[in-house]
Length: 276
Image 1: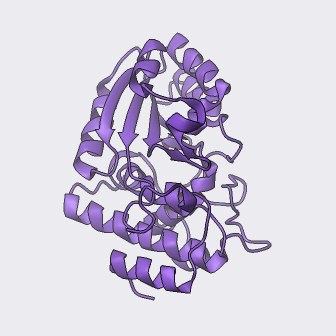
Image 2: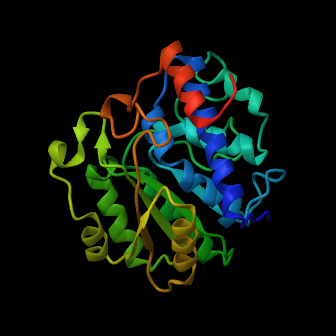
């Protein structure tokens, strides 16, 4: 298991992932940059500091699992997996192309490192429950991480799954809510009146850890605390910025699912310090 502890190095990796997110969506002229950019730090910490994984053995039975329930943020997952060595970064150029393994939503049967096909919002936590319960029943010891969007948790199935996680005391399960406050139709409070997310998860029997989801040090501390939590699942409420790292995309719901044009692409890459 590779574990990078240097904060500057992790920040550099997260920035590289953001550069590839922008390039991936631009090349495809399709995809979801906003929510991908907001969760880049979360994925960086998981894959480079926290998770017990080996890119050379993507199906190892004892590996930690990740379910990207908000599967439309696949550019972030693909860019992270490529950076971690699961496949060549050049493959990112094929994103959303016909016959590419890197489709708009992750496919566990085609992409090394993808533990669950996802994209139908609200279903990921149910799957993660099953993985976590299996780990306990078989005494495998692996942990399961599930990334949810804050707009996604308007889905009722999420809360049915939350009850299940609490009932079975799945302390090897860690939910991360990418709380960027925006979804495709606007602000989450305007769309469904969603608020007090921390209290909601607490009432469903979770250990709740609020954190700045774009702060590497805070994320590491939160995941370490989650590992020490016993007899209950953990929910990390990660307050993030949609479009993080690209000034004109930040906090703009319009960048939920839109590709940049050439001028915007060049500006974004320049801001991130990348090369064309």
